[in-house]
Length: 272
View 1 (cartoon, rainbow, N blue to C red):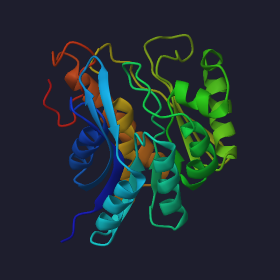
View 2 (cartoon, rainbow, N blue to C red):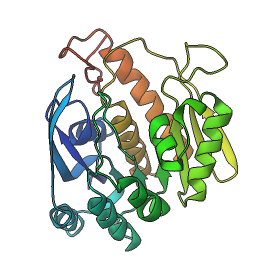
View 3 (cartoon, rainbow, N blue to C red):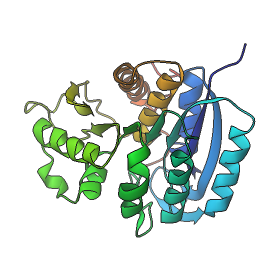
View 4 (cartoon, rainbow, N blue to C red):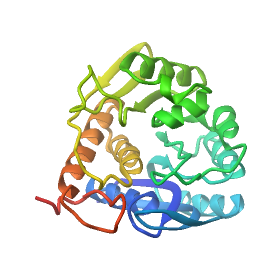
């Protein structure tokens, strides 16, 4: 028996809530063997990111090469890439056909407001990496930055679908725009995401969980989608499964008191 394997190319979160650490837990929750290529080491906790040390592109590629030469990788996700040169290096690997079922989470800013991508990174995403993504998973600020619109204009399902379609025109195979604080139908009880796949627009709604423990939700969602693709799920089903997984993880961690800011979510069902 050979377990399915997936690869995450992302930064390390010393607080354990997001990044590589969240991806590892998510892959494990889906019974996927997780392999990694670390792009940056961060000093962070639930309240702030106090330092970022990017790795050189050659060091990131060396990690990917080592993984690919020894493991059968069924899906890949990217998270924090930190530097434009790393974005371009990952795009080159994708162009070579070496990153199957590529899920790109364009991490630009942390949940605590810290900038996680150097100048020129947005252009590198647009021009080089997005055209190789099977799925792009931006939140609203990321989608706005990538397309060049005001995030305040992304305030309903129609505008979310429009920005997703604009990102598809940049070359992405499909786009999932994460709704965050958008209210669906005027109700704050729901959290909508919009998936654009070809000519199809799929709105996925879920209960909004009232909690401060939401650090790493974006990383975990994209990792869960990659896990589903590695297991052979269709893209819409992988997205639905991932959204249900993150919802359960948010519910489970809601009563936790880990740290003094935005705590992590419950990947393994430890909560009630």
